[in-house]
Length: 91
Image 1 (cartoon, rainbow, N blue to C red):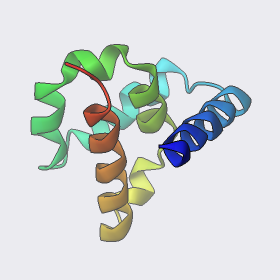
Image 2: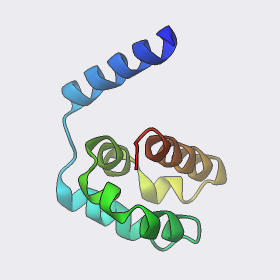
Image 3: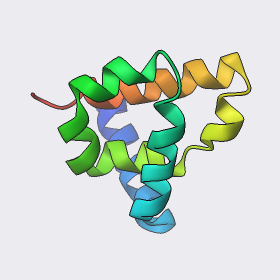
């Protein structure tokens, strides 16, 4: 519990310092991810969340998607981050 609170505070500080990615970069990364089999069903199910949730857009926007898709390990890490961010939100 305390660890989660600390992690959320740290993530908020990083987001504040780094800033939010612009919409163009987020949309470009979503287009790249939509070319994968694992992302399409997630995006279709949670499209509204991908368009409105700042945390999810931050993850997608700052991800180096082209590099992540070249490595299975990085792809899995990105997938886990996206799914975790989605699961944190009440739907």
